Amino acid sequence: MSLETYRGGEGIPAAAELLSRREADMPLHHLRSRCVAAGALLLVLIPGRAHAQARADTTTTNGSARATLLRGGEMGELLTVYVPRNESEVQRLLGDSRDAEQSVLNEAERTRKLALDADGRARIMKEEMEATRVRRDVARQAGDAAALAQLEQAYQRQDRERAYLEDLRDALRADIERQDAEREAAASRTRALELEVRVVQRNRELTSPPHGSSSTRGVATTAPAPSAEALHQYRVLLREMLEAQRLAAGRWATAAERRQLLAERKIRQLDALTRLAAPTTRR
Image (cartoon, rainbow, N blue to C red):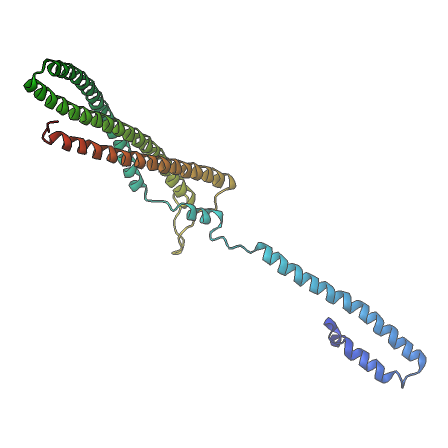
């Protein structure tokens, strides 16, 4: 029987069966020699099989350790955090944001002047009402019914005008708060877009082939894998842009609340103007 029969351990049961059949026909010293030879063969084959199994298990374990589900490595996954937009589009948005920021500044200056004017007119109207009230009291004491009726109507009209001017002043003040909030939001958006331009440019540098490289045999040249330091700097820049976007979004939410409050103030101003146009009634 050849050694190949025992290789890998498959022949071990067969060898044991063969020995059991022949041991009855052999002399005692021959039987002892056969048993010693079979034992030595088992000592050689069993460790070899165990070593082969361990080597296969190690290969499987190492293969599992090297397995990854990241597509394109870390740089490929970073593209799911931010998909770069066209740089010209971001530059256009950046220019629009800067223009809007300046427009809000100019608008706020005009609104402040209007608010100061409305506040001054409301104070003057209060003084006019006080003077009318004094004259009305004098006419009442004098028993001048015609003058009293005329002064009473004047006082009612002045009171409605005062209410309108105060609502106008409050609406203008609310508009100033809205403009201040939008100015801060526009500045935050401008900063976020400036950072986005840098992110787009840096992404292009990391994912583009080296300058001057060309395709070989119809196969496009790919960009080299970014270094660990380059990826770290890109992550830091990306986080800075995202935090700026979060801040801008929060400030725009505040600006939206200010705009809602402004609309409510404008409605009150409109109602006051409607009452001002209504005819005066005698008391």
